[in-house]
Each structure stands twice: as structure tokens, then as C-alpha cells.
Length: 440
Image 1 (tube, rainbow, N blue to C red):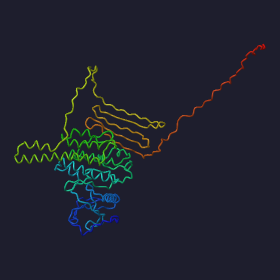
Image 2 (image 1 turned 90 degrees about the vertical axis):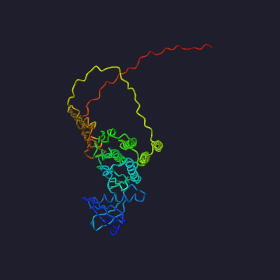
Image 3 (image 1 turned 120 degrees about the vertical axis):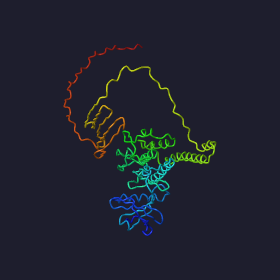
Image 4 (image 1 turned 60 degrees about the vertical axis):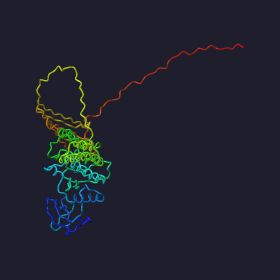
């Protein structure tokens, strides 16, 4: 066992050790430590470095009061488990993803509280200059009291400067991965906010993204407008959905911080809590057979922002009718073209086909300034919209210049020969002066 961790928990304090999640490289056990349930992760050497990094990052934030990040309790060496590396964490019964897939529905106030818990844990990680990179509902654990904690820091990184972007590599967390990460660009902590926006969509729909039909924009960003029609007509659910759309902005600079998200979600939670409070009190009076006059007074306890109907405008219609008729049925087509000009650094091609019934597929390639080749393969139809897959080949080289030699020779010409000009001096007659004789 590693000697880097001084908080060693003695085997005699453990009991009731049961394996709950077997794995090739990592196995999880549930046990009792001094009368409290704990989780023990045991792993073999293949994933040792990533696991050790997770422990070090958890120890990094342990000194702060953090209730929304899974607690690392120490290391141990239980003979019943064997010689694998063993680390002890607080025990949580399940994940948020499992909870969303269960038949037991979370109330709206529970969902907003879980979202605020996640934002609180992520805010602490970001304050410690940590970027998680794999935030998902599967990596959010729920305690018995439904308090959410962020877990699985094995792919997290420490960033030297929170104000600057950097390249950390692409982590497979699709469809929760930020578009700038998918594109292989530099990214920062705002990529975690994008992943959080995907979790908010899951909370609004009470279903993991894997079970939902997801639409994407051409930049591989979740198309939130496609979800809007499926949101129930509830002002607080729509408020939660609006927070999600802000987090899922394609522009990283327009995404909120987790610190500000805590406040936004707190306001929604307060409105939902007051609404639930009124509902519960009304139910109590109705159960006791009280008259409805109490309801008017109770409704005043919770105030929600007034809702106005959308204004209706009489649209302008031009007073003319088109003279043509579209009598031509849709026609299939296909095309392909390419440009390759080394002198101007232009190297790209495009091909596309259509069946004439609304289904289009195609691809295009572009030589990027850094030497990589970007290949985009796409389909489009009336049901799924525009769906594109972006791939990159080659290594980025910022000093890249295409190798070429001009195919033309320098022009050969002789300077024109002009005869030297011949000038003649002008002939002027000599001036004639009259002599002057003064009279005196």
C-alpha cells in the first residue's frame, strides 16, 4: 500500500465488509467503520496513478468545510480484501443517474436542492484551482438524506491560472462535453459549467440524457431550444431550464460561474419551498374539513413573479400575391468540388447528396492553419435536424507552412534602350544698350 497517506485506518475498526461493485481494476466494498457505513475502493496497479491523484486532490480540499464533495477518510489494508490498494470514503447509497432512472419521483424542491448541492461542491473545487472534466449524473453521489456530493476526481486537473485557458486533452464525457473541448481547443473551468447544464436538463426532465433524444447545433452544442417544448408548464421548472440554457452556451465567456449559480438556484429553491409549504398547509386544512376561506390567506404566503401572456401583434402582410407557382417536385441531387492551391494555402473539398425527400448527407475537409485536417461528416433531415461529427487528423504545428515551389520562372526581359537626348543651346541676339550721358 502507498505510504503517501498518513491517515491509516486500522483493520480492527472495520466489520461487515461486502463487495458491492466488482471490477477488473477497481472494486468497491461497503463496510462498517466504528459503527458507520463507509465505502472502500480497492484497485490494482493499472489505474494507480489516476487513483492516487484523486486522493491527493480530495486531501487538498479536506481542510475546507465541504459537505458536497465526497469525503476521503483515509487508507487501510484489510486482509479480507487482499493486497490491493485500499482507500476509504464516506458511503453513499447510489448515484444521481440511478435515482433519475428509478420509479421513485424526486420532487421539484429535491431536484433544485440537488442542483444547488452540485454547484456548491463544484464551486469549492474551482476555488481550489481544480477542473473536474468529467462531471455527470453518474459521478454525483446521493446520501441517504438526498444530499448530493461530487465524486470521481481521477481525471481532474490542477490549473496554474484560473484566468487563462489551457489544453488538457479530451475526456470522453459525451454528450456532456463542452464544444470547445470536443474541437480540441484550449478550455478552462467553464467547461465544467457546460457539463453542469447537461445535468440540469436531466433534472428538469427527470431522466438521464442517455434516455432522451438529444439535438445538437452545428458546433456540437446541445440544442436547448429543441427541449423547450417538452418542459411542463411550471414557472419554477422553466426557471431551472433557463439556468440550464445559460450553462450550455456555446460561448464559454457567457456561461455563469458556480458561485453565481448557487445564488440563482437558491432563489428558485426559495420559491419552490414556499409553494410546497402552501400546498402542505392547504392539504392539512382540507383534511380537517376547514372552509376554503383559509386558502386565500395561505396563498399570500408565497409570492411568485406575475406571469403575463405574450403580446399579440397584427403582423404586416404585403398586398400582393406571387405570380409564380411551385409545381416542381423535389429532386435528388449530388455534388462534389475541391480546391487545392498551395500558393494561397487553400486546401478543402465538399461533397453532398440528397434523396429529394428531405434527407441530406455529406462531408467536407479543410486544411487548418496549424497543419491538421478537419473532417466534418453530417446528415440533415426534418426529424433530427442537422447532426455533424467532427474529426481531426494530424498533429498541430503552429509553425506549419505547406511545402511548395512556384511553378513559374522569373520573367526575362531587357531594360528598354532610349537614345540620349540632344539639346542645342538657344541663340539669342546680343542686347544693344544706349550709352547714357548725364546732363549736369
